[in-house]
Image 1 (tube, rainbow, N blue to C red):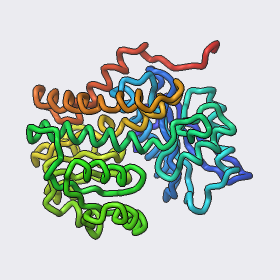
Image 2 (cartoon, rainbow, N blue to C red; image 1 turned 45 degrees about the vertical axis):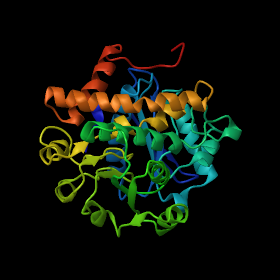
Image 3 (tube, rainbow, N blue to C red; image 1 turned 135 degrees about the vertical axis):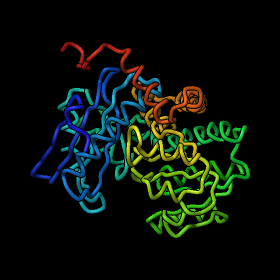
Amino acid sequence: MTDPFTHEQVAFCHDSDTGLRAIIALYSTALGPGLGGTRFYPYASTDAALADVLDLSRGMAYKNSVAGLDHGGGKAVIIGDPRRDKTPELLRAYGRFVESLGGRYVTASDVGTYVADMDVVSETTRYATGRSEAHGGAGDSSVLTAYGVFQGMRAAAEHRWGTPSLAGRRVGISGVGKVGRRLVELLSGDDASVVICDVSPEAVASVLAEHPDVEVAADAVALTGLPLDVYSPNAMGHALDDETIERLQAQVVCGAANNQLAVEGCGGSANLLDKRGILYAPDFVVNSGGVIQVADELQGFDFERARARTAGIYETTLAVLREATTRGVTTSEAANRLAEERIAAAAPGGVWLPAGR
């Protein structure tokens, strides 16, 4: 597990009346208030939840930095089964904890939370984004998340095959939830051949109802063993472990899942992908469309403005891939360096505080 003391602040939140158990982690606020979603998930243990929120908040710091946003990295997890444990009272209790941080953390939706949930959270905090349009928000952030991943995939196609098109390419999508199903639509519109898998039969059925020509793999193991041009992980993190990478037949990996590399650092998953000649589009570079959307909400949401900024993920991804080639490093190293340089250029050791404090 990541050392919690690499983070600026970690807050454990408990409300006995509602059963709320949550953790809010701020990796850095050097660039501004931490911005990142709230994950509601039935973690096996508190340690597992803590490990996830530490990784996710660090990833958000890098994502927001590369996206050019004036926000640091923050993330929250609520421990529990959202289908059973989520109640309006629990979400309001969670909102009070977000509010208690005075704006140092701004939340949004993530796995297990939705626009309607952010509407409820916003009843007790000023620092909830990704709300419905009826509540003055931007709506579903998966719209621009998927669009950004698609732009990143186009950049990877340009770098690998010399054309920014997925036409005629076979793309495997693991996870067709909020983002994955929208990615299917974008890829189908670009004349790609799509293969999907998901642990939820309902999610698969929903995609097939709209796109009957899509193929279905039995599971993620079966999908990664297929001859693909692009493999797109869009579910939970750490999808790229040694076993999966050895099995992969794809030439490109590009997806929306956070923290896709099972092992970070020198000799880790990025190096193994590199050795196998598989081009990895770093997840926090390509999946930043959602955070661009919710950040824009803080200015008074303008969809076309946010979409135009998300379209820039194409050029950012292409720059990272080219930098990796020029320097002879992995694409993960090139992306990390870009993020770290912007954070370092901010006030050294800077901690964001509300005005007047």
